[in-house]
Image (tube, rainbow, N blue to C red; front, top):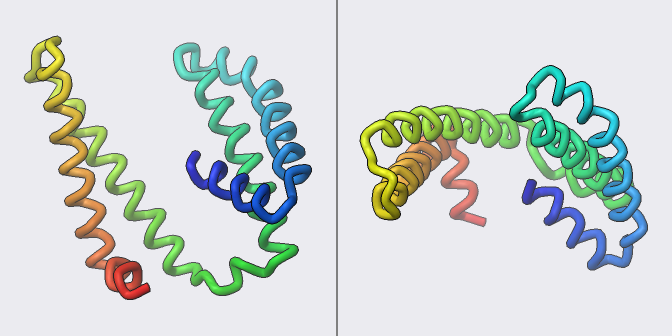
Length: 144
């Protein structure tokens, strides 16, 4: 999660390294607690999902610290965030589908594996730009 790393860098930059370390430790604890259960439920993906849960916990703790102590998020509109989130989910789903279908038609060579990545990336770029344009997010990003 790049947002967690970004928040960690921001907090370290303002001298709040203890907060970052504490958030990471809590994230690791959540990962350790959830991992056995998730491995039982999802044998192939359990460890990765547990890591994701730990990262979410760490990121939420760092964001909450910034929000409480510096009142940063009061300037962010809920509609903007939800539109961005929905656009990202739409892009993710369609890129996964396009990647699945392009993988069916390629060989195992290096170029054969590069093409689905390139095609899916271009499709994702096209989708996210169109979603942002439709929701007015693109104008807001480009004017700031």
